[in-house]
Length: 239
Image 1: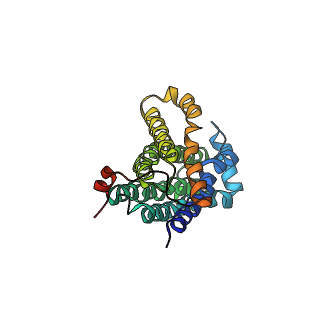
Image 2 (image 1 turned 45 degrees about the horizontal axis):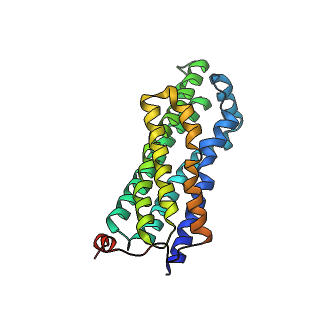
Image 3 (image 1 turned 90 degrees about the vertical axis):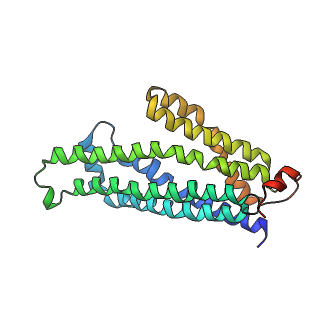
């Protein structure tokens, strides 16, 4: 299999992730959640249960796609530096996917509370609605916490791009900035929440790095000549 084929496969899997992930992350909250109103949010989920369940499925699917994305990128970069490629798989494939799988528990709990199963009859409707909102908030908080991993896995990926010689170095630097933006957002969420909204607006152009990188892989593939190999790179390459 040629490098260009490997690159385009990785780009295609990346595209799937970019298309699927925003459904639960952006669309479902905008469509169903009412800020500060647990009763209205619960009523929306009950009225559009299929839409909400698709959000749960999209999180599961994103976790699976992320595993295959990390493996596709590993195949592309394993000859550049196997250790960094493995670190990329651990951070981007194993750990990020595990968080997606874990986080669906919060949505599943919220759905149980909204549906009001018999064993929940001890709780009043208002209590169930408040608890459902709590689990939805926990889902959002877990996403903010996970941003540190969304950022960290991009650093070994960026280094692999810079050392590869078959991809533009611009994407390596852009991916580093993209990763830094995610890490900074997670840091702000944990320690400086008053600055999170400002930081998020500043981070948007930096976070387009993954989109640009994905499109290059999908359309242009991989081609030599973006960097000459050096003795330092040769020493870092796996034997």
